[in-house]
Length: 137
Image (cartoon, rainbow, N blue to C red; front, top):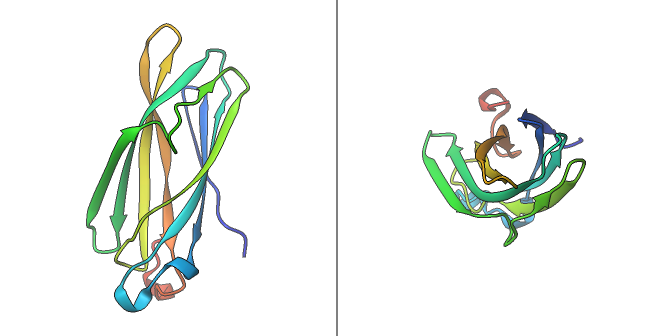
């Protein structure tokens, strides 16, 4: 089965997310589940921007929220000129239910120094351990 893509555009910056459940890194017997997610950030606009910070909101199936904030992504603060894109892959860390949801924002900065938030689309974290009738998606 193909992995779902989630896409959202804010101010001509398109963010596409593809999550993948990592069975080999998860430990269902210990209620510890892990997902990888691939992100593509594409500048569809006319101005150059730089990704400065990230803010993630990760919610498990019980509604418990984890927030993650930091500079850049994977140790980088990429500059995206018009037409450029940047891709990276990361992981969720352990989530204690077999499903959840992630969403967030990237703070971008223009060459003129203006900062604005780009929405990261909400995407579902689903594993085969979640009963079908309880799936979020």
